[in-house]
Each structure stands twice: as C-alpha cells, then as structure tokens.
Amino acid sequence: MTMLRNPRIAAITALVLCLPIVIILSLITLGVESDIVRQVRVLNGGASRLGSVISLGAILLLTIPILLLFLSIVGAFVVDQLPCWAGVPNCD
Image (cartoon, rainbow, N blue to C red; front, side):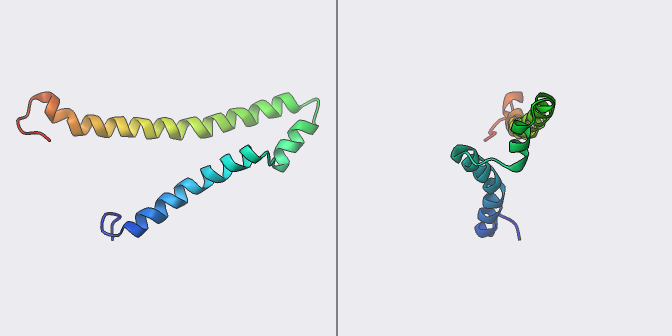
C-alpha cells in the first residue's frame, strides 16, 4: 500500500518525522537541559573544547539534512520542468 492510497500512513509518517524536531525545540524553548549540557557547563578547563565539539556536531546534524532536503526539492523541480525549458510542446 502506498501513501497515496492510504493517507493515514502518510499522516503517521509525517508525525514520526516531525515529532523529534518539535520535542527538541520545545525543550530548548522551555529551558530543559540534558545531563551532557550540564556537564559541559560545569567543566571549566575542558568545557571550551568539549562544547565546541558538541556545537559542531549539532550544527552538522542540523544543516546537512536541511541542505539535502533543499537540494532534493530543487532537483525534483529541475527534473520536472526540464522538458518545458527544452521547448517540448504541451508540457504541464
């Protein structure tokens, strides 16, 4: 069964994909910190190095999937519109 035939599967898939992001954003908004963040803030000597590694990992984990999603959308648009740009009649 595909997602087009059963919209319930599409809704569940969207919920599963969006739920972690919503949970993380709500925890950040409410100021709830995990144990790792507390340990990084408690450490004085190695906090800068450990904090920068964690920050770099978080930046990469957030930017790479967003970049891949953006590139896939642009690629799908180009593939869809390429016949129109090439001059094929009646392309929709």
